[in-house]
Length: 443
Image (cartoon, rainbow, N blue to C red; front, side, top):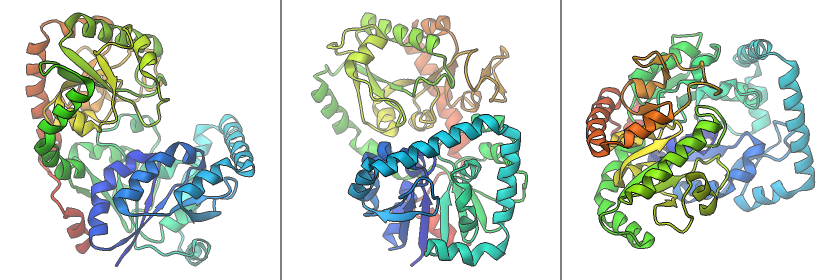
């Protein structure tokens, strides 16, 4: 039996990528511990921890009992974490930590912060500290499972010496070919006892760009969730769709489309364009009457009521044109004709089913205006996935209105292109059940 530590950062999204692999490990009776290193997320992640508890039969999670002390780790049950979040002292410590972090962000430049991070990573790789850290944490692991890009996070730095004591296996927390990391400086990390797993070889430039030490072990494995879940979802597709239509009281001829939402954070789409896009989609739903929009909120997004979404779409809240759903992106992809997003890696899940996702973006006044090195034929910046035809980019209201004209013809064309795009990027390396276990045997 081996011991594994899953570092749940930056969010539950990382667990979604590791989930099927972790189930493989549990099937072989390996031990899995989950570290949640970011105390400000404890309250919002509580309900999600029940998913891990059910999936992996994990009853306790490693959390910080004192946000001001990175070594105050303790295994707690979900109910105990909930009680911890309500303690006055914990709230005060969290407030102090948050305030200090905000102050430091303002007085320390990004360049200096980057240099300090590289220095800490280098010092953490020196073996003399190994025994000390194991005494502090009390537990030895055979493998640390995480996303290597999280090493740049300040709240991860105190644990690096501990992580470097064991074999590290990295898996990106999203399916897609990330654009956001191209705007960052490259960082140093020891590559000894490290393997970077990737969904597609097209994504290797992401690691070459970000890691100053390029001699890392790199292995393409495909998307585990697609290897495990696609056939199961297809098998139950008809029953699930019939149940959903019955629940929503929809006619059998109504077609489903999806919106993968995200917080209104101006990352890829500014709030003005976002409002315009939603109104145009609402107008389409009202005039067509042939489609029902399933809205899937981002895990970090503030929960909105149906009335609030109706206001954003510009339609009545009691209409049958839309609903809020908890279906996962693969489940949505199986029943929807196509989807919209304000940039989301769930477009890879849609592409897996040959369904196009339309990315609604802005040309200006966005945070990631200069982050992507990918452009379309007009010289406009697009995401990597759009450049590979795994998604399709719209960056102004005229393009969205034009998209709805002769819609069936466009969806037919886009579906053909997205199938080929997925095959070119992801289809060459399908994840096979138990592939990870075989990988461990060969380490």
